Structure formats: C-alpha cells, structure tokens
Length: 513
Image 1: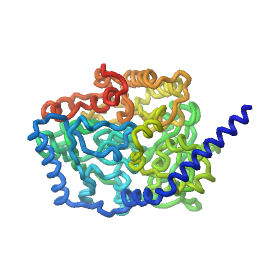
Image 2 (image 1 turned 90 degrees about the vertical axis):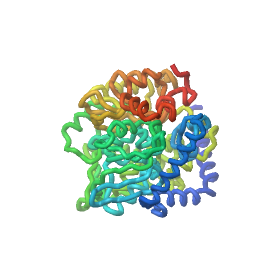
Image 3 (image 1 turned 60 degrees about the vertical axis):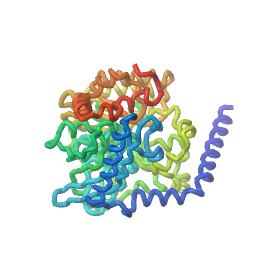
C-alpha cells in the first residue's frame, strides 16, 4: 500500500505542475516581455539631473499638501501592492500615501568612480547597465527584481525590506559589509518638505539613521554608490564542509576572495563557494551559463557538485549570471513549491516558462498569496561566528529547515541600527522553506529563535515575520541615532516608528507587548 500511496502522490504532483503549465502558457510571453523591458532593456532607464529634480519637486509638493491638510495621517510611500516584495501585503489605507516615482539612473561619473541612482532602480537593471560600461558596485544582492531604496530582500536582506531602507547583504559582504556600508551619500525629502543630501562627512546622524529605517525618516530620492571595475567572469571554487566551525576555519586560512557563500543541505552536509572575478578562463576550462532555462537551479547545481565527493571543483560563470544566480529559483523557494523544477527533463521542456520576475507574482490576490506562502519560514538571522555553530545546532532542532543559506558578513563599526558590539565576524543564516521539525510552532519557535539571536548580539531580517516586543526590538537593534534623528527632524509625528511597520502588531500576528 505504501508504494501505491507514493505513486498517487507523484501523479497528483505531476498533474498540478501540468495545470500550472497550461494556465501560465497564454500569459507567458507577456510576462517575459515585461521582465525584459523592466530589467534588461535600457529604455527609459537613464535620466538627468534636471528631470530628477522635477521628480523630487513632485514629492516635495505632496509632503507640503500633507502639511496643509493638517497632518491627520502618518505618511508612507504610495508604492502599489504588486510592486512590494514582502511576504505579507501591508495595508496602506491607514497612512497618507506619497508617490515617489523615481526610477532612473541619474549619472555615471567615471572620473569620480561613482554612480547616482533613484530609489526605484532595480538591482538587476543597475548591474547590467554598469557591466556594459565596465563597472559594478561592491555589494550586489542576488535577486535582480529588488529595488535600491524602496521597501523590498533578504535579507536584513531579501524578498522585502528595502536594500537601503531595510538592509542588503550578499556574498561580497565579508569584504565590503552590507549594501549601506558602501553608500557615499543619500538625498532625502524630510517631513518639513526640505531636500537634504547627507553623507558620512555632511550630516552623519541623518546618514546613519536611514539604513534600516523602512521609510520612517524621510523619502529617499537618490543614492550615490562607489564603483569598482567589473571583470567578465567569476571563478567559483566549490569545497565541502561538515560544520559551521569548519567553514569558519576555512575562511581564516583563505585569501580575501571577492565572494564567499555556502549552502547547508543537512546538518553536516555543506558546500562552500569561494569566488573571484577574472577576465579570462583557464586553458581547457569552459564557461557555465548557469541561468539558462534548461540548467539546474543554482542550489541544485552546487549540490550535484558536492555529491561528487571532490575536495575542490572549479568552474567559470559569467559575472551577471553569478550576480543573479538565485533569481531564477528565488533561492529554492520555487523548487520547494514546484518540485518538478528539480528535474532536468522538466526544466528542458518548460524551464523557459519559469517566471523569476517577482513583481509579476504579486498580482496574485491576497487570499491566494497568503495560501501559497502559509507554513513557510522565510527568515534571516545574522549572528557572530563565535556563536554560529551553537545557533546552527539550535536551528536544526527547532525548525530543521534545509537548504540553509550561509553568508559571511563584516558589520562595520558605525552608528546605524546594525552596529556590532565589537570587532567580530558575523554569519547570516537564511531559512527560506517549510520547517520539518516535529515540534515547530509558527510563533513560539520563531520567538525562541529571536531570543537566542538577542543573546548572541545578533540581528534578524525585518522583511518577514517579527514576533519581538518593542523592548526586545530595541535590545536587538541600536536605535539611539535613529531615535535622535526622528525626534530632531520631526519624524515622530510624520511617520510610524520602524517597529510599528515591521513588528507583529503591524502584520496582525500577535498583540504588541
């Protein structure tokens, strides 16, 4: 009978997948065109300072109108729900919407080695635009649909949260820190309708209050990043590890690679990937275009290499393919929900229909979206390496979620919310699938995880579910500069507190305590 049940299960799964193929087939070309013009085409992407200024003036006028109307509601961006990448959809009806329609690249200053962009530019647009001109930015979060400054990521990082107003880290974060650590300056519209440009040297308190603020300081209108030279390929060296402790030891003995990340497929089955930008491929080596439709989704590709049992395996990947290696499957979220995506034959036949363009998925009605995402754990926790093995062991027991994304990150000693207590190395744990622990509870278990992160002097991603009390939130994040700026700049009456936007009460999860 057991084999009969398994056969029935396989038939049901196959039928559901084919239903998806049939239903999606008529609109597949539309979504592909939408993705092309949104991410890969430069049509309408470039703007100039004059046009940018006009866009900022529109934001200023809306803020002034809010002031004239008596400031009855607190403000938020008027970003439509289908553009949000949060796993929950925020009810913005209680806020006063301000439309920030700024989606262009303002300037590329090659002599000054900087690029200035508007907050609506997606990271995939920026990387492709810069690569064609021989440049890139130091930290490139992997999902190409994430926007620079609006609420998005992972991941403290992905899916939602905002790459600037939330936080963004990536496999180069062990070298450069999180995305906001690389920023040169911000332009922001404050509650009094003034436009301010701030940097480390000019208005440092405001500069450090913006990361992690989730739009509760002002409306971000421009960001300036430094540039580094881009090379054509990434040389990836895949190596096995059996524990977080071994992973840490490997990092200490390795040179300063451009990229480092790892996947854990079980408690003692880890593949570590060291990457370096190169302009040429070694003689006899080939280039793996990992994002082509018929290729295995990247985490499965890495797992297949690990299963070969080699101490080291080196391959070359085009730089843009490497940057957005997790976009096609949104890490392993797609393949966990559509298991046939793990099979080569299905990918060869239907992989071209895989739609990794996240905004198009948010056209799904709220009820259907909540049903599809229910039961999933989508969290990131960033803890010091010295306690990372202990945290990993605890997570294995409490949630038992695999694969796990492991990404080293150097948190800079500055005045942002993410200020570490000392000079220590951190590791990000990304959990993006269904928990398999027997005693998992969707609230109590994640509360226990949060409590452990606080004990470890760590941080958690605020893009997903947050069960902390307001007091615990202030213990986890250093909000001293953030609170100071909100009070001095009139933000308290103009915007909700960041906890009110990301805490459990905002999502209707549990009561605020």
